[in-house]
Structure formats: C-alpha cells, structure tokens
Image 1 (cartoon, one colour):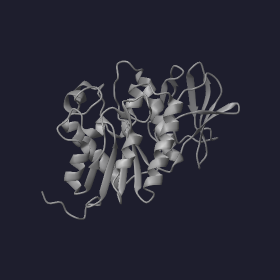
Image 2 (cartoon, one colour):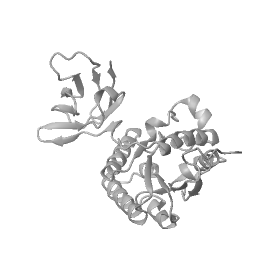
Image 3 (spheres, one colour):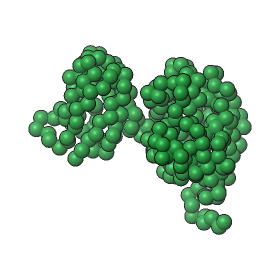
Image 4 (cartoon, rainbow, N blue to C red):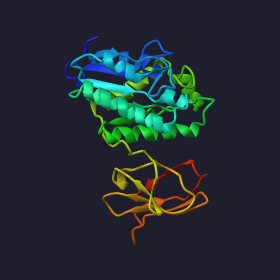
Length: 288
C-alpha cells in the first residue's frame, strides 16, 4: 500500500501508553496498527491489558514510561478505564495521574504529549454515572499540565448500551472488535493531527466557591452544544462564566434547575428546563 508522504503523520515516531483498548484486546488489529498502516508513522505500542493509573489496577501505566523510545515525536497516553473498573479513589487517581504526566514530561520534554480519556464502557459492578467522575478528573489534570485530552466518551460516537452499535463495533461491553478498533483509529488520527487544549469543553464539574457554585466554561457559549454539568449541591446558584455576558443556571432547588441567559433583554438562547436527581448529569442544549 502506497502512503503519500504529505500525510502529516508520515514518518512520525509515535509511542502509545495504555491498557487493553490500545493493546487491541478482542480484535484482530489495534487502533495503533490501523493508524500506522494508514499514515506511515513509526509506531511503538506499549499498551498492556489491565493497566491503569493507580495501584488498584493490574499494573501501572507509569511502568511503561521507561520503555518509551528516545527521540519520539508524539506520545499518546490512553488510560483511565481500568481505574473506573477497579474503583480507584478519585483523589488517588488525580494524584497518580499528575505524577505520571510529570514523569513523561521529565523524560521526554521535547515530545508532543497527548492524552485520550476512555470511551463509553459498561461495567456491571460499577455505577455507570461514576464514569463521568474519572473523565472530569482526567480532563482537569491534563488541563493543569497544558496537555490536550480527547474526551472519547463523546468523540467516539458509539456506545455498548446501543444494541445496534454493540453488534457492529464491540467485542464485549468494554472492548471493541476489529471494526470498532478501526473506527477508533480514524477518530484518534483526526485528534493526533489536530489536538485541542480545550479539555473542559464538554464535561464540566461544579466547584464550591463562597456561597455560590461557579462553573468555568472554557469556550464561548455560542460554540457550546450538549454541554454537561454535574449537580453537586441541593441549593444555591450555578453561574457559567465566560468572556461574553454570563449565561446563568439559577434557582436550583431539590434537583430542579431553571436556566436563563442572565443578560437583561437577551433572547438569543432558548434554554430548556430539566429536573434531575442530585449527583446526576445535566445536559444543557443551547439553541440559536
């Protein structure tokens, strides 16, 4: 197969750290191999099934760092699913992820480092809603290090909870089959070629600040669609701040959220009202 050298990844040295999703468990070929064949990059795939960020997993991704080749152009770290699977405490997960990124940066300061957060997976022993906690933690830590992070939960466009997609793309409720790995390779190729640093654009955690819960949104409101906020309080106000007039989430009581633009005379957005249980996920649609 002839690969044109105009491909931006042609000849690039890429190294993958990760778990079974990158090792290709359940498939005849991993996304990393598909990417190598399609682009002509030089691929080193160090991913090991069962690997994770913390000690609660079968092994730690940090153990893979010493095997990263010298002079690698791009390092892709794709791992947090097993920490969800094994219920790694979130605080330890964040701390260990900080340590992992620090070690990779120290060992390869001139390499481009990219992170990939888990796609939608189903683990029977786990509350599916908790997956958002690990995604949010990953996005936050990567943002702290100015490392782009792809939120594959939303970017992949598939879910094992969809029976039709399950038959087409999945080996089981966590792992992709060969067709799923190939689809993932296309998504990841687009990301690797044009990574974005806006890690908090999709899943945003609310944090207590004074008597108010403030949500910092890192993109303009007119670029935000289907944005997810986590309900963390039973009273008080939520304010979405940005570099344009505020859009407010106000008067949240007993899980009922009333949304308004918060700008006098502003009728540019039609924002719907949702009723959700505390701790659940609220998706806000901005229609213009």
